[in-house]
Length: 295
Image (cartoon, rainbow, N blue to C red; front, top):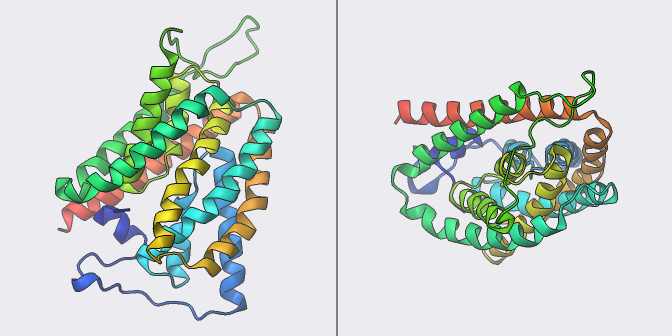
């Protein structure tokens, strides 16, 4: 899986180094590093359960700081995503907040597109900067719409999930397939978690309510991580000690994160997800602009 220069720099790789050399100051293995890894896993799980994402935005840079190499950090986060996503998805499923039909269409299309994106990534000019910036813009637009949209129901004091769009019932399978293809393709091209694209897409274009979109995205994210885990395992770019320790924290974290979202009001979830998307957009956009300005 290929990441752009901005993301590589953000997770701690000096993109100016020659021959793939990485400038890192690894932490010595020991109990302290193990504890910090578990804590990073817990934070990753909370993020994943709350927002329906993989959480690599936390786990990848965290284990880079704890001494993992850049490619190893990318590969190692993938197997930890699977149990966290499964744990969180099980909680949403118990509450009836997963669209099985959406998963059945989105997941296989997304997995296939992720492989395609990984193959195309080395051929995209500009080291992915423009694609990353486009992703940041899309996330920014989604965040703005989610934060500012409010739709009252019959009771003026009650709010329903405001980001349930007016999508015609015709061809919902094509919509789900398009969402899966787009999320999977960008995941393969840029190494981003597909959840940050799927959650707003499920609400804006597929008519899912926000909590249902989060649960459905979480189920898909776990499946998206399987082929990447297999590929990195075959390539020897997974540190299984790191991965196991991350998983130890991710599983309870995902339970906590999913419970927080399920118990929260729709209005609070909407605002929280909107802020999360906005912060993610700023991080992606700022990282890429910094890379372009310092080329």
